[in-house]
Length: 78
Image (cartoon, rainbow, N blue to C red; front, side):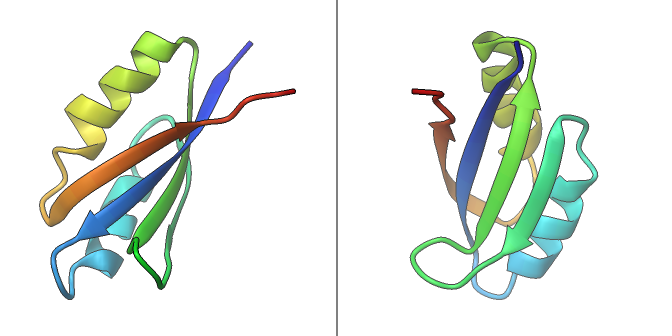
């Protein structure tokens, strides 16, 4: 079973479009969109395990220049 999550991202002012475009190219990211509100970009990502998802967020997504904060929300199937 695949682990999926939404990653809510805050960026530096004026950087959201660049951040979304760069994140969209990362393997494991299925969607990256600019939004308005308390977060600037929302990402949908998937990985084989929770550990792989964590590595994707910490090693690849958070490494994108312009990101100031992330919040990872795993998808649950109730």
